[in-house]
Amino acid sequence: MRIAVVPGDGIGQEVIPATLPALTALSEAFGLGISHDVFDWGADQWLATGVGLPTGAIDRLAREYGAVFLGALGDPRIPDMAHGRDILLGLRRGLDLYVNYRPIVLRHGVIDLYRENTQGLYAGVGGSITRSGTVTVAIDECVYTRKTVEDFVRFCLGRLGRTGRRKVTLVHKSNAVPNTGSLWQDVFRRELEAFPELVGSEEYVDSFCYNLVRDPTPYEGVLAPNLFGDIISDIGAALMGGLGMASSASICPETNFALFEPVHGSAPDIAGKGTANPYAAAMSLALMLDHFGHGAAAGLLRVCLTEVAGSDAATPDLGGKGSTQQFMAEVTDLLKRKTSVLPDTATP
Ligand code: NAD
Ligand code: IPM
Ligand code: MN
Image (cartoon, rainbow, N blue to C red):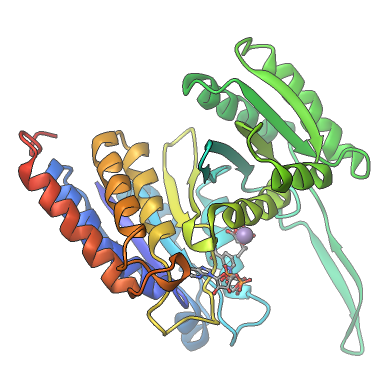
C-alpha cells in the first residue's frame, strides 16, 4: 500500500517526518508492505510557483495511493490561507472525504465525534463585492445536499452501531439556522429508525459545547455539520490535554480512500523549535492502520505512544523534557523492542 505524505507547513514539517520511522518499523514488523512518497505541497511552493494542489493531483492520488498522511497548512506569509484552502479543502472535496472522524479520547472513554467534512459553510458557495478596495458585501452560504447528509449520517450510525456504542447526539442550530438545521434533524430521525440499538438525542451546538466542557461523560457518539464539528474538535482537544493529542481520519466511504491528519494547525508560535507534540500525528497513523485492517499494529503503536507520553521523553506540553524527535525516537525504539520479542509478527 502506498501513502502520500504531505508534511505541509510549520510544525507539520516537524511532526510528520518524526513519526514516519515508527510507520516503517510497524510495516516491517507486521509485514504490511506500506511505502510512502513525500509531496512538498504547502506555503513555500505556493509562494514560489503559485501552485497549491497541482493539476491532476486528485486523480493521481486516487489511482496510485490508498491514503494521504498530512501535517498541517498555514503560514504567516499567507494571511488569507488561500493555499491552505486550495490544498486541504481541495483534497477533502476532491476525494469526497465527507466523513471526518475526530475521536475525543478521555479517561472515562472515547467520544466518537463525526464531522461532515465537505459541505455546509465550507461548500465554497459565496462571494463578495469590493468598492474602492473595501469589501462592502460578503456572503458564505451554508449548503447541504440531502444525499450527503444521508450518506454521512447512515455511515456514522453504522459505525457507531457496529462498535457497540449506544448513544448518539446530533449537534445542530435549527433554532437560528432553520433550513439546513431541519434537514439534518429530518435525516437523523429517519436514518435512526434503521438502528434500533442506538438511542438518539439532539442538542443545540451552543448548549452542547457548554455541556461537553462541564461533563463529557454522558456522550458516546456525536454527529456534527462541518463548522460545528471543527469547533467541537478543538474543544475536545482541550479536554484531552491539548491540540497535540487530537487525531483525525477523513474518509470517503464509497472508495475507502482516506486522509489522516492531526486536528491541530501549523502552530507558527512554536514552529522551528523542535518542541511540537507528535502524538496527534502518530495517533492519526494508528487510525490509518485501523482503517486498513491492521488493528494489531495500530494497537501496539497506541500502547507505545501512551507509554512514552507519560515519560520524560515526552514534549513539554505533556510535562516532559523531550523534543519532537526524541519523543518519536523513543516510541520507535519501544516498538522495535516489543515486536522483536513477539512471535509470528512477520505474518501479515
Ligand atoms: P494551531 O492548532 O496551529 O495552534 C493553536 C495552539 O496550539 C498554539 O498555541 C500551538 O502552539 C498549540 N499547538 C498546536 N499543535 C501543537 C502540538 N502538536 N504540540 C504542541 N502545541 C501545539 O492553531 P492556530 O494557531 O489557530 O493556527 C495556525 C495556522 O494553522 C493557521 O494558518 C490556521 O489556519 C492553520 N490551521 C491548519 C489546520 C490544518 O491544516 N488541518 C488546522 C488548524 C489550523
Ligand atoms: C481543521 C482546520 C481546517 C478546517 C482549516 C485549516 C481549513 O481548522 O482541520 O480543523 O477548518 O477544517
Ligand atoms: Mn480546526
